[in-house]
Amino acid sequence: MKKLIAITAAPLAALALAACAKPAAPEAAPPVTVSAPAPVVTDTAPAVTSTPSSSAPAPNQSPAPPSAPPMPSAAPSAGTPGDESTQNFTFRVNANMPAYQCVAALAAAGYWPTTTRIVITDTNGGALVQTIIPPEENVAYSKSAVYFADVNFDGDLDIVIPLYMGANNWGFDAYLWDSAAGQFVEAPSFQDILRAAVDPDTKQMLSSASGSAASMYYKMYSFENGQFVQTNEFSWDIALDDQNPPPNADHLMHFTETKGDAGNMVTVNDFYLPFNVDSNSGWGIDMNNAQVKPYFTPGSFWDINGKRWQCTFDDELN
Image 1 (spheres, rainbow, N blue to C red):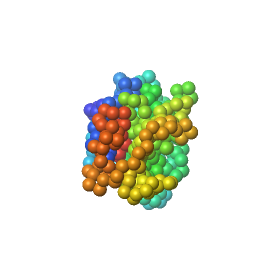
Image 2: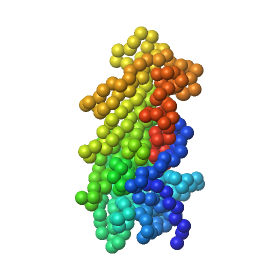
Image 3: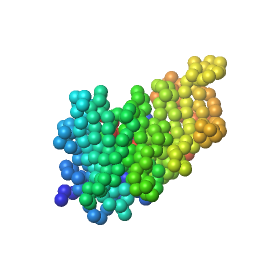
Image 4: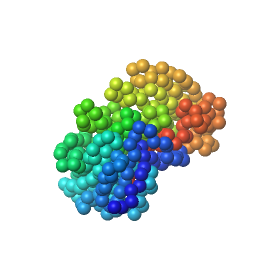
């Protein structure tokens, strides 16, 4: 048997906005194991293994680091329209569950392939557990068509798939394990969490989205009553984009902090600062300004430059 490498169920990646390191995994999440080239299931720990199928593209020359989420060694390829390939994984929802086989089928479609179905079976006998049909418009723009992470912090691994890719942002769809149903259930509200980042310390999902070259939106989400609900937001943009721009708006940046979701939002802070063309922040922000500094201070509530804002799957982008 080949040597297995143990990593956490909450994968990591590098975010372009900050130098990041691997966050601690949630205590309740089962450990994840990656093996190559063939999937191996151990009897002593819940595991995730993955291998590309024979129809998958050539192996990537730069192997993923041990902290990367489970993935095949090759990225999905658009190929010739109509072509289909598969990616195979073996995983356990938690330490008390049997091992499941997960096969993702990808169809060539434009620049990136599309995940057409995800078939999950019990490795002991091959009984069908579930077939997931992702949204038709999904694009498999990352190296893996399926990821396993505990995104609602209940101790069970959930399924996350790449959904869409924009110029500055990318989104995912999530299927949460429902122990009562014995299946994964789609959580459409997860699609709103752009550049999704798992924060096991606060048990929140984080989002850092770019609206333009000069604007950013940082949002926190909690899982409440079966939904991912926005609880906090801090953003900035050039004042010219305001609905009612103030005088000299072309020289100002507008900062806003709110609390609550869209239906119950309360403004916590709202201020303008001169656009700083000599700033090293990349957004024209003087991060030493007394009004702005608390948002960037390490260990603060926001800690904008902290590692927790990194998109969990950044290093998986093609």
